[in-house]
Length: 476
Image (tube, rainbow, N blue to C red):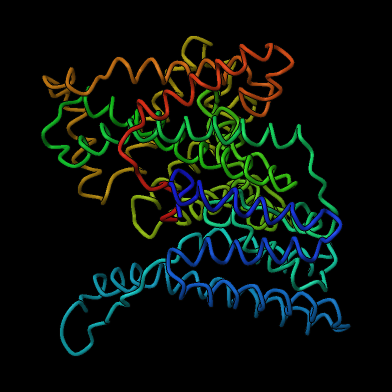
């Protein structure tokens, strides 16, 4: 069930009506409604994977309790490692097994014959990477004594399967989201208004920006050999705005939907196209994923007894490489992550022992060149992320740097779409210190003006929505 589908337009108000009709004092009943609704929402993709998400939930729920009740550290480690093994094992089998088997067979020339390996014919469950990381971090935090495990199984099942953020995040820490299922949620008109506004803004970014950009990007990347340098550059930059509109649009809808039920989810994007460095970019893009890898990969590596710049650089390299691999089982994603890691290391490494400034230090790069650096970084990252395989990646880079004329670039430029893109960017830049452009709009505009803005956005969504595309991050 997609957020921008007619079925979700029916599902959401029915769930809301049942949820608030039982009364805010009946927390258990509300949680039961949320759990049933979340499993129904998820089961519409493939009901068989409900068993997997329930199994993952139970493994981490009981592992956390066992860790808490065990007095011996060795037993605690056993339960922790069992939980991690289960989570990473499930993720590996469904998402990475075929990739590693294919690469191993290719490396040792074992694609055919007696010793050939067979791949698995498995479908990647929607949202597996998201809820796996969410449940795994819960067990780790219990082991580290950052939080106490809950004994309320219903609340924990809701925490894992909460449908607004189940399939594409934000990836929530248990310390933030889990306690909210144990508290009374009262119906607050202002929160509901904010939620509806954020949903509206998210739908605009997804349907008007992302889906229209997807048409151009898909056309170019379907046959990159037919396009010149400028066309490929234009499509690659456009892909950045496609994936931004798609994923940040999803996050806005998810956060807004959660507000309707009285929940607060973490902010996942902070205008990444204003980033002045790669480090700054990753503090603005998919914030909850960056935070997860920082807390559970980067910090454990550097917080050993032997600290050094080398250890820090290794930690950055491994963290970003794993972030790339998290996005998909393909060498293009691995290269994408490594590329990010190398740039971040260069940003943080002094040029010489005497000079503390790094290669990309603001003192070394004039302000007017910062947008060019950001443009180059975004373009290269987009090509790495969007290319289907290494061969296509190499072809695109060759055609760009060979400066092949782009005779058909005029066919790719849609002036109306560029106006909408400008409206989105300008709105977010002007309101960059707020959660989203329509936040607290009633403080700045009277009621008629507010409704004019709402109706304009609704009109643009219905009139100029692109061909409906699945949310990109559903495949991760």
